[in-house]
Amino acid sequence: MSHHTLSVIVEDKPGVLARVSAMCSNRGFNIHSLAVGPTHMEGRSHITLVVDAPEVEQLKKQLHKLVNVIKVQELTAETALETEVMLIRVYCEPAQRGEIGATADLFGARMVDLTPNSIAFEICGTPKRLADFLEQVRPYGVVDLVKSGRIAMKQRSETSLALTPASRS
Image 1 (spheres, rainbow, N blue to C red):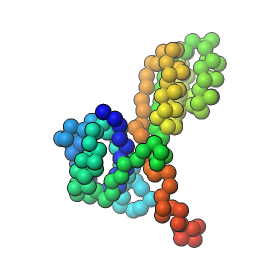
Image 2: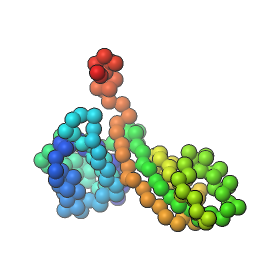
Image 3: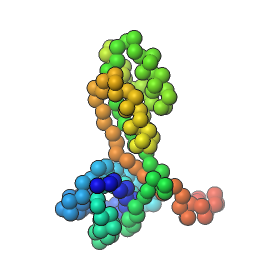
Image 4: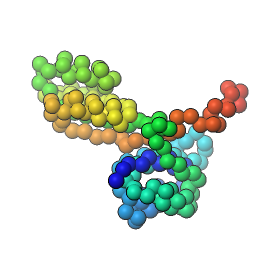
């Protein structure tokens, strides 16, 4: 099964997220990642849903039927801006700090914690960038790892191109 990224605009009402996740679960779609937050429009939230779904069209139709769902669209790697945040703690002897630090610098990772035997980094970027960083530091020993889940939006929207500075105020 392949991952599909869906952008879902919903009314900011209690229970909407629960209905979306329950609908996915009840129909056997595995949620790989789910992130929700406010949009630029009052009373609206944006859900980024990454699911394993053989029939993504069926999932989109089911989501459209839910109360409080305003818009559903699939985003592809070619049409989306995607990012995640990862915190990762790597085993590290003091003599290895420079080497691991250089690798972190290459990826733009930021050191957020240092212990005598480990370094924790924060890195954000595309899922591929995070996976590449993980593969580079994995040989040192990953002590702990947590990811935020993906957020995504269309690269360009017709309305954003039409806005002028005067019309945005």
